[in-house]
Length: 359
Ligand code: IPM
Ligand code: MN
Image (tube, rainbow, N blue to C red):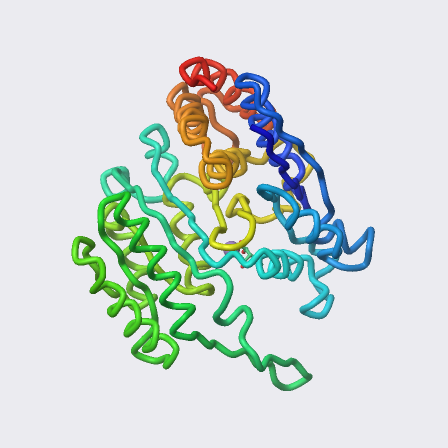
């Protein structure tokens, strides 16, 4: 098959983890005779330096014209004093909006070899396999009015029935492919928009009698995630709560560097690790590329329909972890490797996994 993949390495450790993920996709193409075309485009602080805007129009156009977008990370402390619209992060928000992606899937799966790397006791974290379904196109991140002056900063948290219903259906459909359990997370004891959220999610649930639904307030969910993480299957939540809870969920699995994500439901799928640009690690061959490589696996599955290849790449990640390979963020490992070493180990294992996949 032919596919055009837009690559947006971005800032900090973005380029180095993205390089490893692109190499895995290249390996799929070479091994199975696909024709993948990779084109890099500027975003974030890198784009601000070069073009004065965090998302140059040409980058968005190229992404809209591609089959999938693979992004590294955005964020650069040198640009922190910029007004909201000119921060590196606003480039990512504009990209999500431009692509129309509203469903952000963030799977947190504990690999057995990493149980000791989790900050939780092994018996608590064992069996954790959840996915955060984060609403990505609305809520507090995009709400109007918003403003900032010397004495007052204002943001607004709106949700419409339409927005809640489409993300709820996404979560329930996904739950049907998993363990058929949705936990909807809101703050309905305080927020009107959460009351609408809860009402609409409950209505949607009526169409999915085979899926169990429960509701949690976000504060209780933050607590439950560390008390009983393995009890969750699909966590359905809004843009802000999903941002926060997915960072929390990620470290349960050993490190923030482990989590991949897919942003779907729009014109083109966007794939990026959940971690940020980690400027302190940049250029030091220290960053964990597994979140980025796992995002490449999600790209194969959701945008290119290459399910077996995606499974094989995830199996390759699992295999190297079983062998004891780990980057510094995963704590003391018998086989500590850098970003490149981890990427190479995964590709060696991937080569074996791919022999079982025919084009
Ligand atoms: C994430 C990030 C972004 C977000 C930032 C960089 C805008 O934290 O993808 O989780 O808050 O969505
Ligand atoms: Mn985040």
